[in-house]
Length: 443
Image (tube, rainbow, N blue to C red; front, side, top):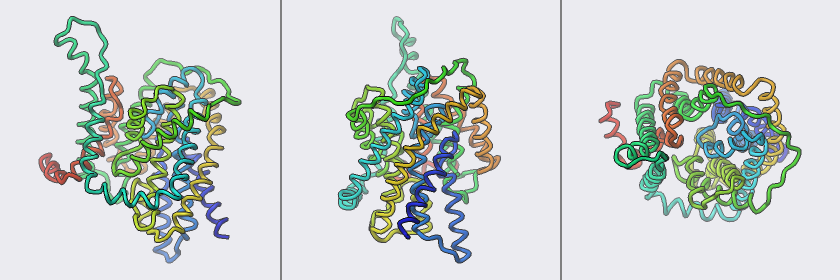
């Protein structure tokens, strides 16, 4: 009976998240927050929600959203920060009429990454992860600073005009690089403001950051879609396609490395994990690259949540674990094994839903047009932010969108917008966050 309850809950979570993941700008954490609030209300009323329902439901939602969110990221260019790299090669496929193929390649990489995660989670993780946590905990702060330095130093000049040298060449080379540095600095200052003097009610928890992330990573893409005169070509139907197992496994291995690093270290996100994986493995094949980014996103979201269930460790990495931590604290391998089973079921179900949902999205694009669909997405995104965070959230959204447009217009890397969490958290881990906030006049 318990096995059926676990299976049903995980599949229900996968189905709900699969549908919601197709809505651009809507993050799974928004929906999970409602589930957790409902569980808290039931507990206050004296009705405890069984862990066999709650844990598989949340795990299934996390797995399915990480898989299916590839659809709006590639087809509608409305990514969260962990999908930024997927969008760029995916856009090439989209402009060649092969958007559905890009979605399925990314999904195949995600499924392979999920398989590698489950393969290592059984015999290795309970032994190695606690040891790694003990050894690396004192060094987390400088590792995070090293990641920030690498992120900024890898923003290479993109100027290409021929000139006689001098200031003209210098300014040409530093246009995109300076835009990247400015984006990181301004988003970091926004992060300090939201952390130490947020205009948004802190009672809605991580939603404090929701308007900033939507403004930095989603709205600039949508505005660019509306302003651009480029027409999306008709997308060819895809009955089948060949994808060599070697390419999928190579991409899954590379993405698993980056996603695993992001899942283990606090504050480091899936987008940064994908960046590190791409540089570490020097991937040049578009198919391998898409597969690696799908694996990185899956391992980041799901692996970070799985760490919460390791007995004796209970690392809270990511919003899923943070929200569940207020309701339960796993004490044995029972919850851990239940999470593993839920991951397998939800992963298989969401991958099977990926193709049909991609076809539905493409049919909507063909019927209503890319720009009209982008306009509808923009309206829905604004409504979601206003409904969750109110007018103050819209003000934060406007500021974040202004910052997010800098790299879009100047040709810099959009990932520099992650300064919104990287800079304040790195300062806090180094015990200088409060002095910096005081110097900024926030305390």
